[in-house]
Length: 431
Image 1 (cartoon, rainbow, N blue to C red):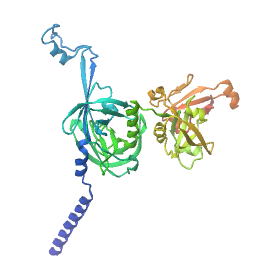
Image 2 (cartoon, helix red, strand yellow):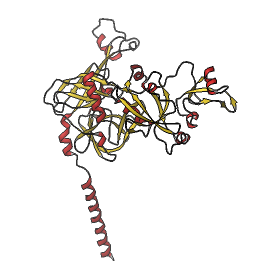
Image 3 (cartoon, rainbow, N blue to C red):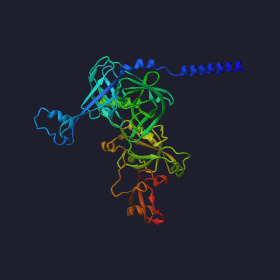
Image 4 (cartoon, rainbow, N blue to C red):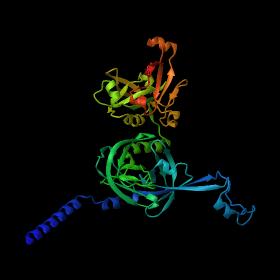
C-alpha cells in the first residue's frame, strides 16, 4: 500500500513537471524581438515656459527688497506674477526613416517650446515639430541625423484578437522598458476620439509610454500606444493603441501639409438600439442612425434624411455608428462614394461626393449644436422646437413640437424617440 502510494505520488509529480514544461515551451520568447527593435525606439522629453498666474506667495515678514542678492532665490521658490516657469513632460516615439523622422503622440509634444529626443546610444538631439493632429493624437518630428535605425512596419488590419503584442517605451521616464500582452479587442471607440478605431490590449502601459510602438511577434509595428484606462493614473489592464495603418496615413499628410485634411459627410449619428431596430423592421440592431443632417453639407446635397440608417459606406458594412466617422475621415476630399441606407423599410443607394471637414466642425469635436429657437429638455435628454404654420398645415396636425436632437441617454432615447419626430402629447396632455 505504501509502495503504491509513493509510486503514484512520483507519477503525479512527473506529470505536473511534464505539463509545466509543455506550457513553458508554448510561451513566446521575446528576446530576439527586443534585440531587433529597441534601437529604433526613443525617449522624448519636452519643456514649455509659462507665466505664473499668481502673485508671489512669500511668507509675511520675509519680503526681500528688489535688487537684493537673494531676490532670484526667493522668486524661484515662491514664484512671481509674470516670471516664466517651466513645465516638462515625458513620452516615447519611434524612428520611421534613417534621416530622422519620428512618430509620437500629439499630447506628448503639444505646445512644447523645446523637444529633446534621446536615442538608445544616449545621444540627445533637438527635434523639430513637422506637424501634429489632435484628432488622431499623432505628431511627426524630425531630428538632424543620418543612418538611424528604423522600425519595420506591419499591418493592423491583419492583427487578430488574442495575438501576442509587445510595447516598448519609457514609463515614468525609465527608458526602453518592455511589456507584453495580447490584443483584447479591435475597433474600440472612445469618448472624444470618434476618428480612431483603437486597438485594445492588456499590455502594461503607464505614463511615459505614450507615443511608443506596439509590435507583433514578427517585430513589426502594428500600433502607436496612446491611452490607458485608469482610476489611479497607473496601469489597470486596459490600454489603447492607434492602428498603424491609420497612423501612416496621418503621418503622410503631416509630412506633406503639416496638418490633416479629413473627409466630411455632414451628419450627426447615433447607434441603433434594439428598440429602434424593431421600430424600423430590422432583424437585428446594426448601422448608424442619422439624427441630423447639417444644412449645406454633402449629405444634404445628396438627399440623406433624418431617420435614415446607414448600413454600408463605400463597400464597408457598418455594424455600429462608431465605424462610420473613421471611414469618412480617411476618404479623399472630392471622392464620390456609395452609401446604402435603410429608409421606410427599404434599402436605397445614395451617391455622395465627400467634402472637406470645416474647421468649425473640427473645433466642435463632434459636439451637438442646435438651430436657434430650439429648447433643451434635460429630463428627457432632447432638444425641441415649435412647429411653424407651414409645418402644421403640411403635416395635417393641430399642434405638437419637433424633436431637433436626442442628445443624451435618457427616457427619450430609451423610448426610441429620434430627431425629426413630432411629439403630439405628453402625459395625455396635448402639446
